[in-house]
Length: 539
Image (cartoon, rainbow, N blue to C red; front, side):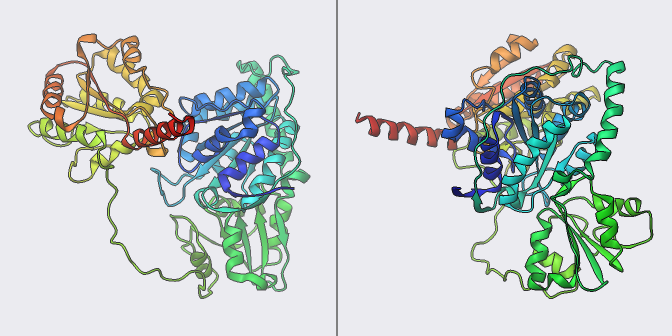
């Protein structure tokens, strides 16, 4: 079959298309974004009429994918790890409802927080929901596992959680494709009450779910991805989860026969394989990227005393992503992986792009807020969070998607005035609208600034669901038209913008300011695309 050079994200996307995908749902979030982007750009997806539009947030994406599964088709939903928090209600309950067509939920974790607020480990969500979890070791396995994930989903009538990490998502390797599978035909669930989670129905289905979960441990396809490699001596046994197995092999290479190794690619773990490993060892080193999930549960799995090494005893650092050097240190080996790279460029903090509208907004806001004093600006997840850094030093919070609005409301409830919330257009339609409704109902004395750059800028310029809709959304929620203002954040409008912001800050009630200016990067790409189209047409 054809070989392609693919990112881990792209391997997952291509596999889904080859496995008969009918619908792809997602909200942009690094390191998962490229999955949807690959499918959106795919000629194969276009010719197969695969649905592939961005959703407003991860919860709506999860629910729409579940709806496609309800209709018998294969669906996939992708998000970063913190996005799974947003989708958690639907995700957890989808295990109780079960699925009809195959449903794969890709969660891209970000150890070391390269572009995230935390390091949470999505494997816990799989255990919490009682669903199969797959964790590929490399790009080829990511591709191959997707076929098994859809098959397992339809076999057990459960969603499958597909966990990857940043290094796998954003590294590239040759991937051999398989024969293409045809899409499922439309078919409604055989059990017409399956998706109705009234308590009497949910209790029966949850009881069945707990029984199914125990059978997953020994399923030949799922457990087949967990490989026990028996070595010569007793010494140290190693449990290496997902990509950690690659780091292990980089260090021990041809000498892997000196160790007893359990290479883990799926969960829940087969107790017999874990017991077989520990029975041949004096101690066990657990290598897992993320939280010490296996390490914490090892005693309970085995019901015996065993010396366990890993993140909890300091053999492996408690935070941050694994790498070959850390694994070498844990094994007591001298690291031979990599080399020191000379510092050729002085490190510099991130900053706004030259000409960014967010920068002009903060310049005006900083001058207006000088009289009120610091500690009054609540921000959100997006490029505009850089307002926390010099020279602006404006932002005092960045917790989760949408929290700027509701934290400002809470601070105002406590008596803070003025209180300002800054949120982006895409983040507003993701999670800010309900917070605005709270503010409208209480006429909270806050000023909400929606910095509208007409795109999802931080993740690469994907379509924003808010474009050309913000005024109607705000008015529909109930914002007073007299206190719904639009400004254009440009230097030439600096004094005018200060005047508008200053007046609304003094209003003892809810104000909304739309600071509208297209993202400078998106504008540049659009101009280039327009010029290329003109050249192509000979204009």
